[in-house]
Amino acid sequence: MKKQFKTGIDATQTTTTKTHGYNTCSERIKDWPTKERPRERLLAEGPERLTDAELLTIILRIGQGTFKEGVAGKSAYDSALSILKEFRGLRGIDRAHIQDLRKVSGLGPAKVAQIKAAFELGKRLCAGKLTAPSFESSATVAGHFRPRFTGKRQEIVAAVFLNGQNQILGEKEITEGTPTQATVYVRRIIEEALRLSAAAVVLVHNHPSGNPEPSAGDDDTTHHLQKACNLTGLVLLDHVIIGDTDHYSYADHGRLMELESE
Image 1 (cartoon, one colour):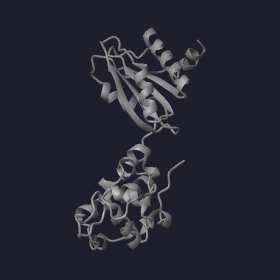
Image 2 (cartoon, rainbow, N blue to C red; image 1 turned 30 degrees about the vertical axis):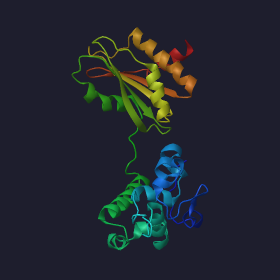
Image 3 (cartoon, rainbow, N blue to C red; image 1 turned 90 degrees about the horizontal axis):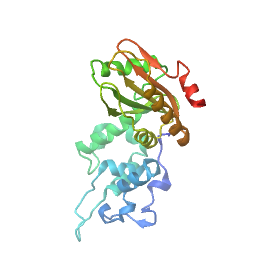
Image 4 (cartoon, helix red, strand yellow; image 1 turned 90 degrees about the vertical axis):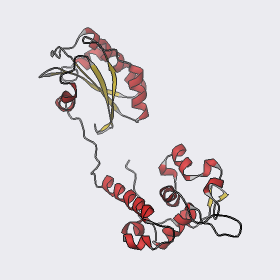
């Protein structure tokens, strides 16, 4: 399910002066319990658990004043609450002209630029401008990797990690071997797939000889990875071997199903 960007201000989030029962108003954030600080909470719990004010606090980073005795201070969290209230939530901040934001006490050009940059990234993501490329066929995989493998005298093994729509979440070079073989570390592939919350894996490697036909060792590697994926709820979509001008696909040739039954 896609996460929705909040378009308004939640009074329960922005009018309160407490976070998890701790009085944060007019206190320096560094004086808060470590687990209550917005940045630490984001790293520990994920950004979706933070309120609008807490997320804006991370962007602002520092507040105003010195907090010395007798001198009024304003934490970044207090500033975030004030800005959200003044502009009536996130939508108002997004629509606000740069010069209007510059008029807010404590918002210099650097902070205004950071705020506007964060909003623009969010809009680009929603508009699909950051949509990851997808692998719909073995030919797409081969076309993606062939330039990288061209001229290599050793086997290079890479794993591609995909989401449920076959879009790339990431890729990782697993090993570089001798001119005739490479040792594939299945555990490293599975660990990276789980770290990225991938749904599927595609294994890719080259044959420096130029002939993409699989060897017995390639079959063993594919079978071992297939079993590991099955145990962890992942799908091994394909193992693509890239030669000079052609490629071999375990999926296209039905070898994945054959190995599954062995």
